[in-house]
Image 1 (cartoon, helix red, strand yellow):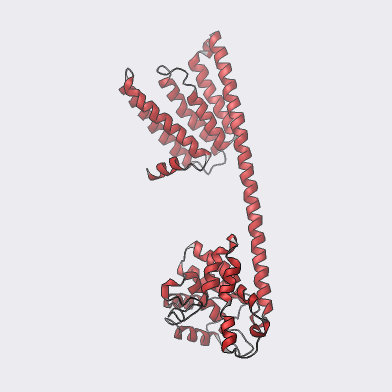
Image 2 (tube, rainbow, N blue to C red):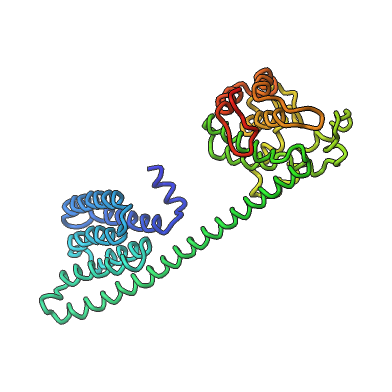
Length: 375
């Protein structure tokens, strides 16, 4: 029932509009039935017709994966309209609109082919009930006129539906191409950021892979994984605003230099926040240096108040940094890096994420990584 109310409040497709039309027609007929002679009988007939419709549409749903599903629906929906027309024609004059709704509905949903099939089927039923096959001249004229009307409805609505489908397909292709362009641009930007600091070459790609593997292990939601993926690629984009003298300094940084370096998350956040496509990355870009005990920067967030994407990324980032050679120290081994991360569980890192990361990294390996092993 909730779904029906949502559909009535905000129809989002031609199929939903058609459903609303049929629902309105049904309620209107039900409302008028008690006012007519033999109304109760006709209400029972209408409810039987509704039950038949439910069965037919259930069958159509079951057959939806078949190649000629649209033509099957044309037959099934026409089979619903025919008894309704025969049943109610003696009560209502000009009940041909039932057939018109069927043709418009089938044509709008499945195109001209199924629409014309439904036209032929309903035209045969209409011609039979009008007396076409008994040779009555008035019936012949009436049936031919209605057949032309039905065909025109199928042609116009079916053409519009096919043009709409073509436009949607073209839009989908354009969106796919745009996403590919965005992805290539992000990869190029991440590579450019890594290249600026030779000691962290391919850092973004490695950390992204490790972080996503950990997210899979934790079964995080897809929107959080998107934040993690984009954020991992762009986490250090704010370092564009850090002078090379600080960024490439071979020795330890002074307190003043560290103060400048700590500004890069906010710089990156400010750079990306006006780009809608990159907004999911903001959580990681801004918070990837926060610590679980609240002693990180720039906001001093604590525990679960740190977004899960940033908590996952922080471990992957530190692990890659520890197992990489830097100008001021040599790389740690896999075992040494894991021991350091374990020591920081509950301090720098979320213990839950640490456990998931340890499960992942013991078997994690890919081309270009640090040749991780169990040793």
